[in-house]
Image 1 (cartoon, rainbow, N blue to C red):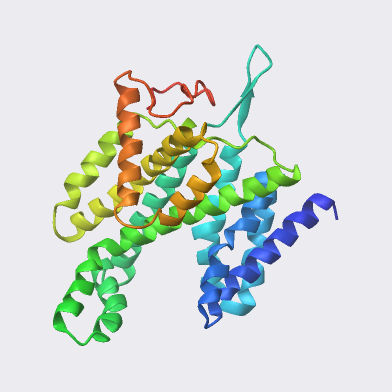
Image 2: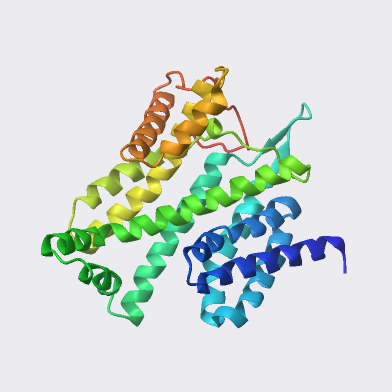
Length: 316
């Protein structure tokens, strides 16, 4: 058996064990399960899509004794398949006449991730409509036990009012989880010299101009009630994540010349998820994208990203 296959199998075994940590009663089990995609990304970004495929297969098989076939299949679809797709796309490159190498753009990777999140949500909607009582009934079933634990009626109503936002929360959590694990995997590979591509910069994110239209349409749908409103809220949450990352790129670019950059970044990330800072960061990224669209200067100091991967579409 080759060293390549052994490394991929080892990554899959570690990922399968981390997935099985969900069965643990402690909160630490949830944290371990959250980094289950990390070994898969290490295999995918360090060995290629074939290595990721082997690791995903091994992870699914190794989790069978702990959680059963339904859990293994779900994990393979929800995390394994996206890791294979993203690893394959991330390692695409082309050379130019000057001998330079252009890697697949980070903005296009974000679109792949957002598209998979939206496809997963649509498939969930269809599956629950065909084989159950629908998404709303399922969300009520999930939240009612938590709402019953609150003594005051106002508290229960406030919790149930969050019903429409649950799919958006899960979609954003899934997307950010993949971004976190993929970024960490790339950083580890770079640290030990096993990376196959250079690490893309957040400030290099370019999105198609139509993506702003997707976000605006989603915000309009989000004002509606019922299933269309839930779809709009979820789509808006998915569509705003790339602009959130672009906003982080603006902040990184702004702090780059500062001597105390690392201290400021640690402080910033420590406060990042305090409301309304995430919305402000996403708004900063959206503003930067609009300035690019209008031909203005970027808010960061990178001076533009140029041609990262040969995408001919106009991007912002």
